[in-house]
Image (cartoon, rainbow, N blue to C red):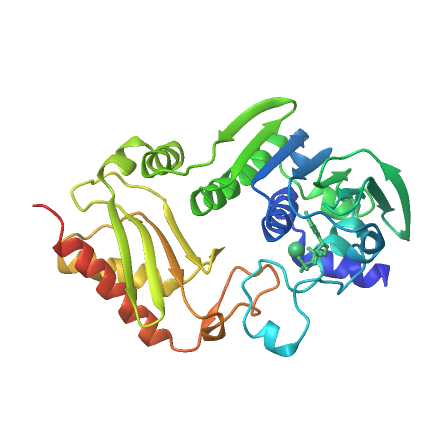
Length: 325
Ligand code: ADP
Ligand code: MG
């Protein structure tokens, strides 16, 4: 089973940023409102994620580390209508197979916290009492210590940290309700405070996409027949080249040419030839989209992609037409 986990790890755990992604998504799935991310040496020495979510019960700690153990999908129908980030039960097993992983957690019902430890190839999990407030801390030490080829493939600490920082930006902009704190080598690098008002929300947008983008961006909020699109579009008057092109489907950041195409087309109709920046969130019935098409879940497949494309196009056209000249 350990070899299978390491092979799966090859698909899920490419670098420290992919570990951070999986762990933060677990925290979000657990309903956390505050997530602290501590990184040492670009993540190759330490990745520690601490959340105030629901926690994991003592009896489930060892299970959480085993392969295909997920608490999120129970039936085939659940798999066809996924709203959580996780659904394969692969991340913790994969990460623990290529690192020294400690999981400490406390649920609201338990009076004390418990800790589980798994190390590389010895898949025996030890559970011991610990001190921890409600929520979970996952500590990943010495990533790839037992897969030297993979370890050598890591770039400099600075580059690996940049990947983590960039990924967190994308999540922090979609989840402006969550308090995120990112540290590197003991120093706070990012502090994203929860945004509960429109002004705070604008502040976070400015913090991540820059003042110019935030000040001039057009807001989008459009709904039709079970589809909803919200977010921000770079103003056609703002000619700054930006690489902000973030698209989320039911809260999941995805790569999809469909939205790029729709944005480009709507702007071309206005005589704007360059690629504008955008932060767009699409929400639709989870039955209408397949998220289980890529190991790292970066891609989705819409059942009615033409329909979704046209909806996005119209939402953007209408935002552009309402823009003051
Ligand atoms: P998946 O997210 O696909 O279910 P994971 O391997 O990422 O699989 O996690 C396994 C299980 O461990 C989850 O289904 C969940 O029950 C539990 N879990 C992991 N991280 C957390 C967390 N931060 N808070 C609460 N539960 C967690
Ligand atoms: Mg997960």
